[in-house]
Length: 209
Image (cartoon, rainbow, N blue to C red; front, side):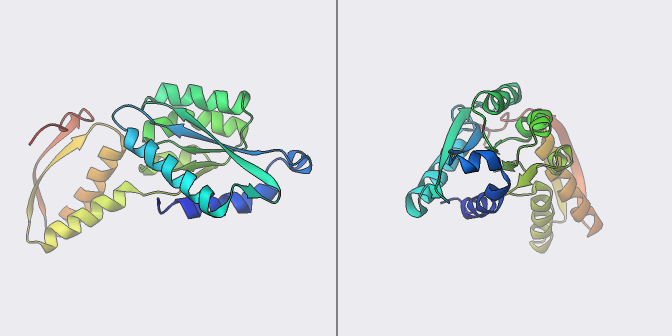
């Protein structure tokens, strides 16, 4: 089970009394819209989310205070424009009280204006870039901050005696954030970046050995 699943459940339990009090009186379902890549090159993320959520609900039940938790999945295939469209549909058509998912930073960033307009708590399952959090006061990160991973990687490299480095930077938010975290720690602790290649398309190195 994903480590963030119990954290997400805890936040939902705390937030339920604040969400749609009129609906609560009528004992309507609590709707959580999960937006993210369920197919395509990043589908492994969406599949793990589904497995984690379904496993948790199977073990702990899908009812809280007499209200059934309904999870509605929408597949973005990793496309930010699709994420924004599906977020809008979940808000306007499905009337969800919570949103979650967003496997890639561009998905969350594109959807932020809709989240802000609807004022819906939105859990970022995997979005790693620090740039996303200032875009919405309704964003709740339950995953990683990838800049920290970069600094930790640099620390390991230096402890392993690797004082010179070459870095290839994936051309999207988390790629640049990771590189920044790595470079800042690495160079400030005596490491030397001998070369860096920025602007590499996401997935371009997938089949390289």
